[in-house]
Image 1 (cartoon, rainbow, N blue to C red):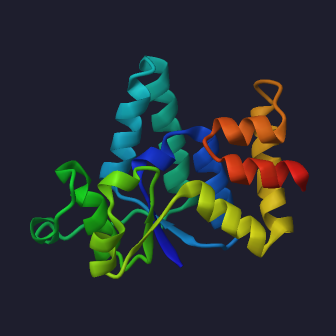
Image 2: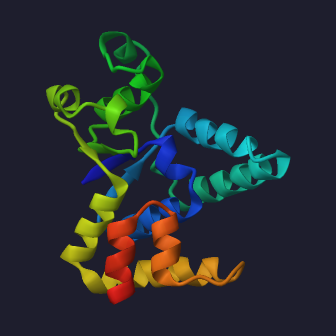
Length: 179
């Protein structure tokens, strides 16, 4: 399964690490574009210059770790597509052009399921997607959660449930905390 990761799921660190951890475990193949990565960096810039610098470093590491994930979009494709927010059409075009199965986004209102279905795509909420992966293989997703928690605890003191819930993944957090 190939899934486009929208910028809104790439920018929050814990959410991104959970999603990419699941991809590393073979649950799906991630796809993004240069434009989505740039949106992430611009969003991080709102945290200050350190935020943008950190994001650009993480983007460089992401590109090195996932060299085949970055895809380009046929320029003409965007002109034939429509979404409620024209600024998101590039995400839909990327999914169509890369033959993805769906788009992972926390932005449901701007990616109506009926419009995505016309292009043969689904929309996946990150929490529902990760919870589904946990249901499919608890041990592998538990390992992903433990790695993300260990990294977060290098900079603070977190419990599994609190960390994952703060990342707007409440069902996944509850499941991982029980595991």
